[in-house]
Length: 312
Image (spheres, rainbow, N blue to C red):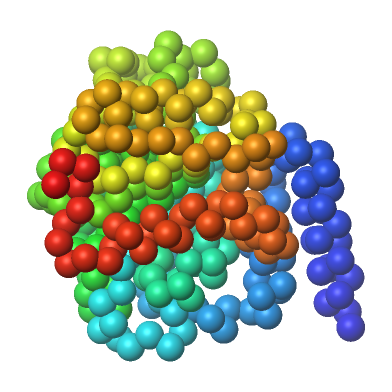
Protein backbone atom coordinates (compact mmCIF):
# COMPACT_ATOMS: atom_id res chain seq x y z
CA UNK A 1 0.00 0.00 0.00
CA UNK A 2 1.30 3.44 -0.93
CA UNK A 3 0.39 4.89 2.45
CA UNK A 4 2.72 2.59 4.33
CA UNK A 5 5.79 4.48 3.17
CA UNK A 6 4.52 7.67 4.77
CA UNK A 7 3.52 5.83 7.93
CA UNK A 8 6.92 4.18 8.16
CA UNK A 9 8.80 7.46 7.80
CA UNK A 10 6.52 9.10 10.37
CA UNK A 11 7.28 6.38 12.91
CA UNK A 12 11.00 6.51 12.11
CA UNK A 13 11.02 10.27 12.74
CA UNK A 14 9.19 9.84 16.03
CA UNK A 15 11.49 7.01 17.06
CA UNK A 16 14.54 9.14 16.32
CA UNK A 17 13.08 11.94 18.41
CA UNK A 18 12.60 9.44 21.19
CA UNK A 19 16.14 8.09 20.99
CA UNK A 20 17.56 11.62 21.01
CA UNK A 21 15.63 12.59 24.11
CA UNK A 22 13.60 15.05 22.01
CA UNK A 23 16.55 17.45 21.98
CA UNK A 24 15.22 19.19 18.89
CA UNK A 25 11.89 20.25 20.40
CA UNK A 26 12.20 23.91 19.42
CA UNK A 27 12.75 22.83 15.82
CA UNK A 28 9.91 20.36 16.17
CA UNK A 29 7.49 23.07 17.15
CA UNK A 30 8.62 25.28 14.27
CA UNK A 31 8.21 22.41 11.80
CA UNK A 32 5.62 19.68 11.44
CA UNK A 33 6.84 17.29 14.13
CA UNK A 34 3.78 17.86 16.34
CA UNK A 35 1.58 17.28 13.29
CA UNK A 36 3.53 14.09 12.58
CA UNK A 37 3.02 12.97 16.16
CA UNK A 38 -0.71 13.61 15.85
CA UNK A 39 -0.90 11.80 12.52
CA UNK A 40 1.03 8.82 13.85
CA UNK A 41 -1.25 8.66 16.88
CA UNK A 42 -4.29 8.73 14.60
CA UNK A 43 -2.93 5.99 12.35
CA UNK A 44 -1.92 3.76 15.24
CA UNK A 45 -5.38 4.13 16.77
CA UNK A 46 -7.03 3.27 13.47
CA UNK A 47 -8.45 6.75 12.87
CA UNK A 48 -10.73 9.04 14.84
CA UNK A 49 -13.48 6.49 15.32
CA UNK A 50 -13.52 6.85 19.10
CA UNK A 51 -14.10 10.61 19.06
CA UNK A 52 -16.45 13.05 17.34
CA UNK A 53 -15.78 16.72 16.67
CA UNK A 54 -18.69 18.91 17.73
CA UNK A 55 -17.18 22.39 17.35
CA UNK A 56 -14.43 24.24 15.48
CA UNK A 57 -14.94 27.93 16.18
CA UNK A 58 -13.33 31.32 16.70
CA UNK A 59 -13.94 32.81 20.12
CA UNK A 60 -12.35 36.14 19.11
CA UNK A 61 -11.42 38.19 16.07
CA UNK A 62 -7.76 37.09 15.93
CA UNK A 63 -7.07 33.95 13.84
CA UNK A 64 -5.27 32.37 16.81
CA UNK A 65 -8.32 32.76 19.06
CA UNK A 66 -9.82 29.44 18.05
CA UNK A 67 -10.80 26.15 19.59
CA UNK A 68 -11.99 22.67 18.74
CA UNK A 69 -14.24 20.47 20.87
CA UNK A 70 -14.50 16.68 20.84
CA UNK A 71 -16.68 14.15 22.63
CA UNK A 72 -16.69 10.34 22.66
CA UNK A 73 -18.10 8.99 19.40
CA UNK A 74 -21.16 7.49 21.06
CA UNK A 75 -21.98 10.42 23.33
CA UNK A 76 -25.49 11.86 23.13
CA UNK A 77 -25.88 15.54 22.32
CA UNK A 78 -26.66 16.40 25.94
CA UNK A 79 -24.49 13.88 27.73
CA UNK A 80 -23.17 16.50 30.18
CA UNK A 81 -19.66 15.08 30.24
CA UNK A 82 -16.91 16.70 32.32
CA UNK A 83 -14.90 19.08 30.13
CA UNK A 84 -11.11 19.15 29.80
CA UNK A 85 -9.77 22.36 28.27
CA UNK A 86 -6.26 21.72 26.95
CA UNK A 87 -3.87 24.60 26.15
CA UNK A 88 -0.83 23.86 23.99
CA UNK A 89 2.78 24.86 24.57
CA UNK A 90 5.31 26.45 22.24
CA UNK A 91 7.06 29.16 24.23
CA UNK A 92 4.06 31.51 23.76
CA UNK A 93 5.30 31.96 20.18
CA UNK A 94 4.15 28.87 18.28
CA UNK A 95 1.68 26.00 18.33
CA UNK A 96 -1.80 25.26 17.03
CA UNK A 97 -4.59 23.39 18.81
CA UNK A 98 -5.39 21.49 15.62
CA UNK A 99 -2.23 19.41 15.99
CA UNK A 100 -3.04 18.27 19.52
CA UNK A 101 -5.99 16.07 18.67
CA UNK A 102 -4.06 13.17 20.19
CA UNK A 103 -5.07 14.70 23.53
CA UNK A 104 -8.72 14.27 22.58
CA UNK A 105 -8.10 10.71 21.36
CA UNK A 106 -6.45 9.85 24.67
CA UNK A 107 -9.01 11.44 26.99
CA UNK A 108 -12.44 11.69 25.32
CA UNK A 109 -12.98 7.89 25.16
CA UNK A 110 -12.49 7.88 28.94
CA UNK A 111 -15.73 9.83 29.28
CA UNK A 112 -14.73 13.46 28.80
CA UNK A 113 -15.47 16.28 26.42
CA UNK A 114 -12.15 17.77 25.30
CA UNK A 115 -11.62 21.36 24.15
CA UNK A 116 -8.33 22.24 22.44
CA UNK A 117 -7.84 25.98 22.84
CA UNK A 118 -5.48 28.32 21.01
CA UNK A 119 -4.40 31.82 22.02
CA UNK A 120 -2.61 34.85 20.58
CA UNK A 121 1.13 34.35 20.20
CA UNK A 122 4.28 36.47 20.12
CA UNK A 123 5.13 38.73 18.27
CA UNK A 124 1.49 39.71 17.85
CA UNK A 125 0.77 39.41 21.55
CA UNK A 126 2.55 39.56 24.90
CA UNK A 127 1.54 39.03 28.52
CA UNK A 128 -1.27 39.09 29.54
CA UNK A 129 -2.90 38.28 26.16
CA UNK A 130 -2.61 34.52 26.68
CA UNK A 131 -4.49 34.77 29.98
CA UNK A 132 -7.16 37.02 28.55
CA UNK A 133 -7.63 34.50 25.75
CA UNK A 134 -7.72 31.52 28.08
CA UNK A 135 -10.47 33.20 30.11
CA UNK A 136 -12.39 33.98 26.91
CA UNK A 137 -12.13 30.36 25.82
CA UNK A 138 -13.49 29.31 29.21
CA UNK A 139 -16.35 31.76 28.78
CA UNK A 140 -17.14 30.06 25.46
CA UNK A 141 -17.18 26.71 27.25
CA UNK A 142 -19.49 28.15 29.90
CA UNK A 143 -21.94 29.34 27.28
CA UNK A 144 -21.81 26.52 24.72
CA UNK A 145 -20.57 23.26 26.23
CA UNK A 146 -23.95 22.11 27.54
CA UNK A 147 -25.51 22.12 24.07
CA UNK A 148 -22.60 20.06 22.71
CA UNK A 149 -22.42 17.31 25.32
CA UNK A 150 -20.29 18.93 28.03
CA UNK A 151 -20.98 20.01 31.58
CA UNK A 152 -19.84 23.63 32.13
CA UNK A 153 -19.98 23.05 35.89
CA UNK A 154 -17.24 20.41 35.68
CA UNK A 155 -14.30 21.94 33.83
CA UNK A 156 -10.64 21.01 34.27
CA UNK A 157 -7.82 23.05 32.71
CA UNK A 158 -4.81 21.21 31.37
CA UNK A 159 -1.72 22.44 29.56
CA UNK A 160 1.81 21.60 28.56
CA UNK A 161 4.82 23.90 28.97
CA UNK A 162 3.68 27.47 28.12
CA UNK A 163 0.13 26.10 28.10
CA UNK A 164 0.66 24.76 31.61
CA UNK A 165 1.70 28.26 32.68
CA UNK A 166 -1.47 29.70 31.13
CA UNK A 167 -3.63 27.08 32.81
CA UNK A 168 -2.02 27.51 36.22
CA UNK A 169 -2.32 31.31 36.15
CA UNK A 170 -6.00 31.04 35.24
CA UNK A 171 -6.52 28.72 38.18
CA UNK A 172 -4.53 30.73 40.73
CA UNK A 173 -4.95 34.40 39.77
CA UNK A 174 -8.68 35.06 39.95
CA UNK A 175 -8.55 38.32 37.98
CA UNK A 176 -8.69 36.65 34.58
CA UNK A 177 -11.83 34.60 35.13
CA UNK A 178 -13.44 37.58 36.88
CA UNK A 179 -12.82 39.72 33.78
CA UNK A 180 -15.09 37.33 31.88
CA UNK A 181 -17.69 37.10 34.62
CA UNK A 182 -16.66 33.57 35.60
CA UNK A 183 -16.33 32.45 39.23
CA UNK A 184 -13.33 30.47 40.46
CA UNK A 185 -15.83 27.66 40.96
CA UNK A 186 -15.90 27.36 37.17
CA UNK A 187 -12.77 25.20 37.50
CA UNK A 188 -12.69 21.81 39.18
CA UNK A 189 -8.95 21.38 38.80
CA UNK A 190 -5.80 22.33 36.91
CA UNK A 191 -3.24 19.94 35.42
CA UNK A 192 0.20 21.27 34.54
CA UNK A 193 2.56 19.20 32.41
CA UNK A 194 6.16 20.45 32.57
CA UNK A 195 5.07 24.00 33.28
CA UNK A 196 7.14 27.11 34.14
CA UNK A 197 5.75 28.56 37.36
CA UNK A 198 8.70 30.38 38.94
CA UNK A 199 10.99 31.90 36.31
CA UNK A 200 11.55 35.55 37.24
CA UNK A 201 13.92 37.25 36.47
CA UNK A 202 13.47 36.51 32.77
CA UNK A 203 16.58 35.06 31.17
CA UNK A 204 15.47 33.28 27.99
CA UNK A 205 14.38 34.61 24.63
CA UNK A 206 10.81 33.39 25.03
CA UNK A 207 10.31 34.80 28.54
CA UNK A 208 11.95 38.14 27.70
CA UNK A 209 9.83 38.48 24.55
CA UNK A 210 6.58 37.55 26.24
CA UNK A 211 6.95 39.00 29.74
CA UNK A 212 9.74 41.57 29.50
CA UNK A 213 7.37 44.53 29.14
CA UNK A 214 5.02 43.54 31.95
CA UNK A 215 4.27 46.48 34.25
CA UNK A 216 4.74 44.32 37.39
CA UNK A 217 6.96 41.44 36.28
CA UNK A 218 6.92 39.67 39.64
CA UNK A 219 3.16 39.31 39.31
CA UNK A 220 3.51 37.24 36.16
CA UNK A 221 4.57 34.24 38.27
CA UNK A 222 2.13 31.52 39.37
CA UNK A 223 4.00 30.99 42.67
CA UNK A 224 3.05 34.52 43.69
CA UNK A 225 -0.63 33.60 43.63
CA UNK A 226 -0.46 30.39 45.66
CA UNK A 227 -3.26 30.33 48.23
CA UNK A 228 -5.36 27.81 50.08
CA UNK A 229 -8.68 28.28 48.32
CA UNK A 230 -7.85 27.09 44.82
CA UNK A 231 -8.95 24.29 42.53
CA UNK A 232 -6.92 21.11 43.12
CA UNK A 233 -3.65 21.04 41.20
CA UNK A 234 -1.83 18.16 39.53
CA UNK A 235 1.78 19.02 38.71
CA UNK A 236 3.66 16.55 36.49
CA UNK A 237 7.29 17.03 35.49
CA UNK A 238 10.09 14.93 34.07
CA UNK A 239 13.35 14.76 35.99
CA UNK A 240 15.29 14.96 32.69
CA UNK A 241 13.61 18.21 31.66
CA UNK A 242 16.33 20.71 30.74
CA UNK A 243 14.04 23.28 29.10
CA UNK A 244 11.75 23.90 32.06
CA UNK A 245 13.48 22.63 35.15
CA UNK A 246 11.44 20.38 37.47
CA UNK A 247 12.13 22.82 40.31
CA UNK A 248 9.24 24.87 38.86
CA UNK A 249 6.72 22.19 39.81
CA UNK A 250 8.50 21.36 43.05
CA UNK A 251 8.54 24.99 44.19
CA UNK A 252 4.91 25.61 43.29
CA UNK A 253 3.90 22.47 45.19
CA UNK A 254 5.86 23.64 48.24
CA UNK A 255 4.38 27.13 48.06
CA UNK A 256 0.86 25.77 47.74
CA UNK A 257 1.41 23.46 50.70
CA UNK A 258 2.70 26.34 52.84
CA UNK A 259 -0.38 28.34 51.84
CA UNK A 260 -2.67 25.64 53.19
CA UNK A 261 -3.36 23.64 50.03
CA UNK A 262 -1.31 20.41 50.31
CA UNK A 263 0.14 19.72 46.87
CA UNK A 264 2.94 17.52 45.60
CA UNK A 265 4.74 17.34 42.31
CA UNK A 266 4.66 14.06 40.39
CA UNK A 267 8.23 13.64 39.12
CA UNK A 268 8.75 11.13 36.32
CA UNK A 269 12.24 9.68 36.30
CA UNK A 270 14.28 10.14 33.11
CA UNK A 271 11.43 11.88 31.23
CA UNK A 272 12.22 14.98 29.19
CA UNK A 273 10.24 18.16 28.65
CA UNK A 274 8.83 16.87 25.39
CA UNK A 275 8.49 13.31 26.64
CA UNK A 276 5.74 14.34 29.07
CA UNK A 277 3.39 15.45 26.30
CA UNK A 278 4.43 12.76 23.82
CA UNK A 279 3.45 10.11 26.37
CA UNK A 280 -0.14 11.16 25.70
CA UNK A 281 0.16 9.88 22.10
CA UNK A 282 0.84 6.50 20.54
CA UNK A 283 3.28 4.83 20.35
CA UNK A 284 4.75 6.61 23.39
CA UNK A 285 1.65 6.12 25.54
CA UNK A 286 2.83 2.56 26.12
CA UNK A 287 4.71 4.28 28.94
CA UNK A 288 1.53 5.08 30.86
CA UNK A 289 2.98 7.12 33.72
CA UNK A 290 1.40 10.41 32.61
CA UNK A 291 -2.05 8.90 32.07
CA UNK A 292 -1.72 6.91 35.30
CA UNK A 293 -1.51 10.24 37.13
CA UNK A 294 -3.95 12.23 35.00
CA UNK A 295 -6.91 9.84 34.82
CA UNK A 296 -7.39 9.26 38.59
CA UNK A 297 -7.07 13.01 39.20
CA UNK A 298 -9.73 13.76 36.59
CA UNK A 299 -12.06 11.12 37.98
CA UNK A 300 -11.70 12.49 41.51
CA UNK A 301 -12.18 16.19 40.83
CA UNK A 302 -15.09 15.78 38.40
CA UNK A 303 -16.98 13.05 40.25
CA UNK A 304 -19.11 15.16 42.57
CA UNK A 305 -21.72 17.73 41.58
CA UNK A 306 -20.29 19.90 44.35
CA UNK A 307 -17.29 22.10 43.61
CA UNK A 308 -14.09 20.66 45.04
CA UNK A 309 -11.47 23.20 46.07
CA UNK A 310 -8.48 22.94 48.33
CA UNK A 311 -10.24 25.16 50.84
CA UNK A 312 -13.62 23.40 50.57
